[in-house]
Image 1: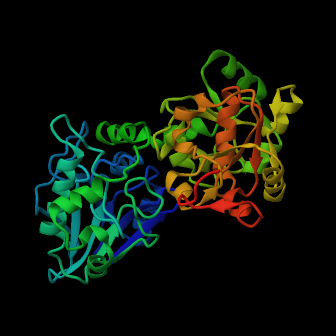
Image 2: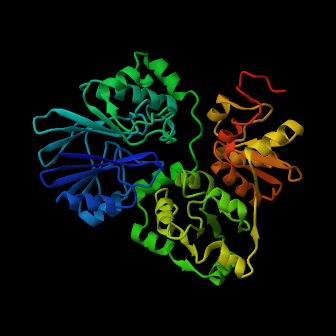
Image 3: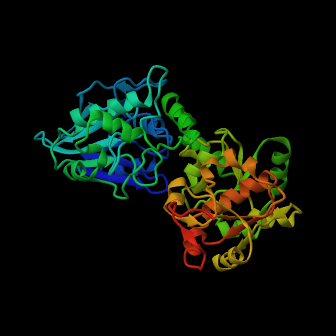
Length: 466
């Protein structure tokens, strides 16, 4: 028996490969299917089933392409409806993988079709559960992503309470919990950095499994939920209805474009230039009006949150040799309309007479000095929870997640110093603001982490602003 977790940190996502006696199953696969084919080949196994715990909202799953490559059946839980061939399992239905059994436990609450898959060995001993977004390590799934006209998030939270207490908490304490996500995902509020745990330990440490009433659980779960990123509903729809072949998407997106090609595309289409290099490389020089979202970070979720048109035509500026990786990570969140990368990057663009720009970036020490000597305008673009933990005195919160809501309140005549936690999100914010005509922007290199090491006055929310 083999149970292997394939964890992708930038998405905080866990997929799973299970093998026994030459048969295999994959649970919640990512868009690119080759890693699962490689595992099957390595273990001399044939992929028989592809199990989906629910219609994922935060990424586009690879079930369709993987099924085409292997002939495997796609399995969803009860209540699911798809536009492609799939098996809609019944509660408690069992599927055989060699000597192993995978039992479907219908666990609605995060979504109506959510299923937890219980793995049993040849002696029917409970080994582990693949809990999807029903149960995380330290948390449970948010109940606001599958609301129908006749259901509220409180209704779904109540369903989730019943699913946890009637289906999952009745299992043996030594069962291992393998969730679909970990810390960093927007699918929950309080996820642990750990990617698996025993159910017994979760019963002791997970607030959602504590000895509380259903009413208390509903209140706890529905309090403090931030709005879901705009791409979630679009990804869920793609997972229900289907999407373009991954190989075709990759081939189109990794096409080298000449400068003349790029100029023509920018003149005749709505294409944008997406720069995925390091923040300081972008600050030093970039193609004017381009958007920065660095590949070395939570790239795909930020693309999904901030590029509102999932069909947006995208032209890449990428570090040499990382073009294919970038296209792959775009496809994971359904951004399949990358039409190529600029051959030669910013240097080739500049040499051909293309307009470039820069963003002034200063050190935290320089910033601290300006704070103490002048009254300056500062944009803290971290998440609300980070801001509430500690922030600069007299500085308000301007979360990058909601930049479209607050950018209109800024003045194009003012100079703004922008910081996040480490310098990644502040450069994203600066690039988006520049596209909207805000040009007096100064980035604080190293962000709040570096600012805290200076003499700048750091306060908590308990401190009154002067």
